[in-house]
Length: 165
Ligand code: ADP
Image 1 (cartoon, protein in one colour):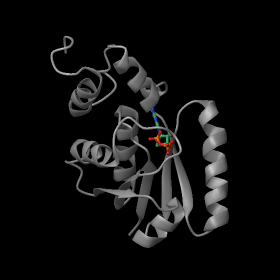
Image 2 (cartoon, rainbow, N blue to C red; image 1 turned 30 degrees about the horizontal axis):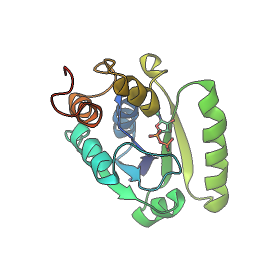
Image 3 (cartoon, rainbow, N blue to C red; image 1 turned 45 degrees about the vertical axis):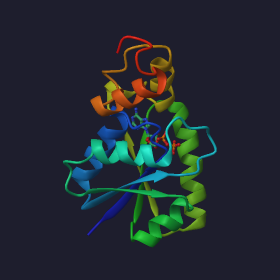
């Protein structure tokens, strides 16, 4: 049985992330979406909110579970018996970062592999920061995130009654 983890900040989860979750779930026996609790970047959603949104948007997938973690990713992978870390690659600039992370993780635990999925063409530009920036300025992100995430973004950026939904 092959268990993998898909770690990330998911602040918030968007359709690019979900495409990777679906593809990993088709390929591997078990996928654990691991929501990192302490990234160095500043976040819009709390760990609890990010986990809840990932859970809600992956609910129908039988072999997908969602867990928060604040450990080193390789330590967490080993703890839960995952043999590989799944990541997504968008544009070329992702490659350098993901390559460095994969090398560092390999140095920390050579038994944990990194597997990168190349993004679907239509999600190439999609990132959580792009989604947040557009939503913060009142732009339409309904083609980029699931409905429940859309509502969560609206709640963050548009206090009730202040603007049209
Ligand atoms: P992190 O802070 O660990 O980079 P993210 O939530 O930003 O967390 O991303 C988690 C993973 O999802 C990363 O491997 C990232 O490259 C991948 N990812 C993000 N957006 C997309 C997308 N549009 N298509 C494919 N993979 C993506």
